[in-house]
Image (cartoon, rainbow, N blue to C red; front, side, top):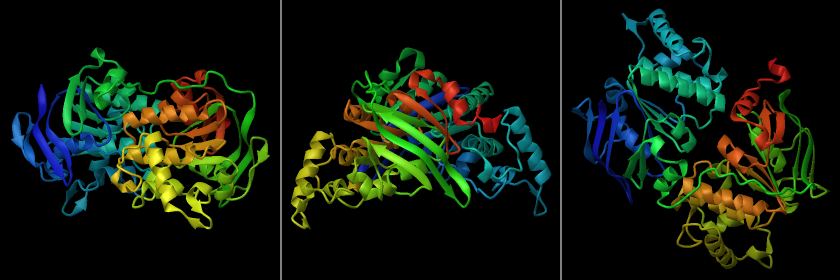
Length: 504
């Protein structure tokens, strides 16, 4: 039975038609996946349904009755709840306080905490959430925080639930637990919409799939009638392969990159616990782990941005020492994990961004001075070589999509031909077409003559690209071996510390 119908929803922003007469139906007791590249209009369409965005044209029907929402409060009153990709929580407050905030039961001006506690605990028991109402948010795992967000929606009577990239930072085991909850919601007749880019998960959990492209609904289908590559092609209007295994056919026995006894402490707390890793020539070593287990600090130490307590770093038989600039000169390239925060300068041009960290190179200089004509020429060469969509090298980063911004970062590092690349979150916030392209360039770059350390929160990416995987938990490498040696369950257990001496 249809519970939501969106008719001809249109939303125009300056220079961008975000939604172009989009039509969507959502039924009772179904899990509906909404797919599309970045900027396709998925989140905007759901924000219209949730009252966060007012459309320029179109109609919204809830249970065959036309409605109009000017705020999320009105949508919540109609039974619509949305769990955002970035959780909206007060970290110093308890689970109970976060769940009931803004909807506290009260009498004579006093909050009825006992009544609230009974109601929330009943929901926790019903869905087997295994979470303590008195725990502070700051002490919870990412999976537990997500359950808090779900409880907030349920507490407010949500019957139509929207999830924006719900598994982006979950381990495989947390993802399975989340899917179990979704199936329980479905059994109760709730309607669920998932906005995601993880096509494997869509095939596993969705009852129906809607694909968007450039603000337009381009297709509806059932998982049993399509393949993952079919979905990818519908999203980008060309044939594409998703997370195709791109492992090396052969890997040299020569150790090309080695870190020994990396120890990092802060305020007497061990952040990185005596890490040792080896990468062979022609090999990609992937780091798998739940974010916040030392990955950022590992990246900073291996790129010269942070000085550890102890570390011996060797590239191609030579010790690497000094600061970040010295590391670059000694053959270590770096694709930063935070593109807009540390990898690019948004208001500068492509050519200027291509010089960052490499301004000392002859290709950018004329004697003692910078030669911006040379930089522009090089920028235009990179635009062509790396398929960057921009009219010229004078285009600013802010004018470009996330995928093309990332291509600029990839071009800057790879074109300098470093011996080893520390590649962090290379496709975060990037559309599916750019993901395919970046993955191919990563493997082509490594070839048989280079090495790469890949750090990614996307486990599918790690599995597809890595010849070997090392799992990090609380700053320690707890498992390491060939990629095919691990299945998702094993990886999930290691990523959450199960099986380590600390957890026994």
